[in-house]
Length: 154
Image 1: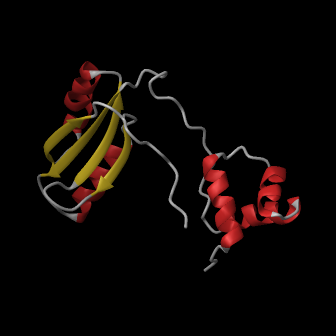
Image 2: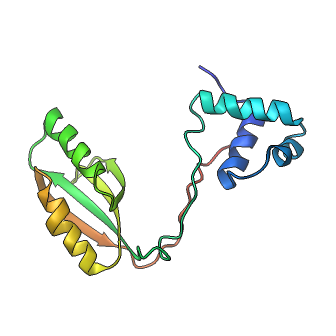
Image 3: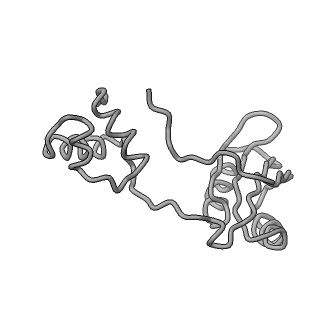
């Protein structure tokens, strides 16, 4: 398995801060020429360290002002029920993140909606139609203090 060296890690740090940074700028930062930088980035992509390039959007400007963390407890626990839940929940566009967790609940969902009415519609008409949901506990975000997509790289 490919292990990135310190230069690769430096490239990853820069790219996750700004995916539109140019090869030339990266070459200046790493003291390499353009070609080796380009080859390293391709190698990082090929080996799965870089999975995609995206634009981060302002959710508020797009009308998604309410974030809700929703803890889900399933009624039953079998492999098939869990797989079906994951398939159903990942098809809901309001769910932007989903984690299988330990403790009192089985899953943690991050849900983005316009407002409380929109969340109520989500719970009643979308989440409510997912089989084997035993209970849902909602926590409403009052203020977003830190939100980053950057993975800490040493």
